[in-house]
Length: 217
Ligand code: ADP
Ligand code: MG
Image 1 (cartoon, rainbow, N blue to C red):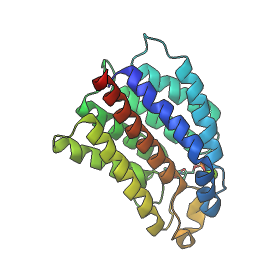
Image 2 (image 1 turned 120 degrees about the vertical axis):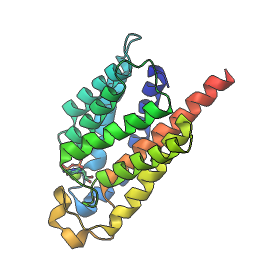
Image 3 (image 1 turned 45 degrees about the vertical axis):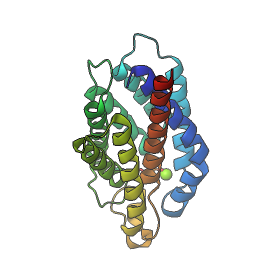
Image 4 (image 1 turned 60 degrees about the vertical axis):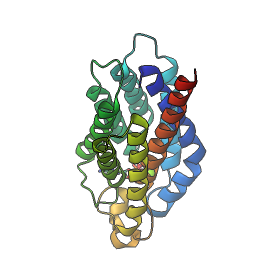
């Protein structure tokens, strides 16, 4: 997975977030302040502009750094520093690499998950995006142990995030804005867990497309 492919994966995230922004804001409207789709779309539009600035000298870490800065500068909500930290940490995990193999890709996802967990001081079970990131990273690591390819590992991460996202409906919120609702948040999915699923599934789809194009060409 070259820096160019990493950039293509994140371009697809920007498109997917834009397509799902109304859904994300609706979810946030139920247990939060209703801005998650708007803030994510703003952040990912800024990331799209940052990706336009990428040049051929940029490695994966440099690309992630550009994206993290763009996201942090444009998102005032709590998801701003959380996702910016994820991008920064993921990039650091790839330091010095010309590309990602399956093990490095899993380390990339694991670093993002750990970054969010530390930045948010949130544990699994609090009804936050951590409840999507942790099962995503675990599923990716499991796929790697089973000998999975980069695509298999990233698809596993997306499925893990989806299961985690669905699971947040069964959790009473303990962290973030929705924590004041506690039990009243039961039955509703966490918007940050939902945006995590949108991101990882868009990354997986783009990766599969990019690699099959490479194989065809
Ligand atoms: P805000 O709550 O400031 O309006 P957003 O609506 O953009 O921010 O994002 C809300 C999401 O951020 C939540 O659904 C949750 O997943 C995530 N979140 C909030 N606080 C934390 C935290 N401390 N740790 C991890 N994730 C958090
Ligand atoms: Mg919000």
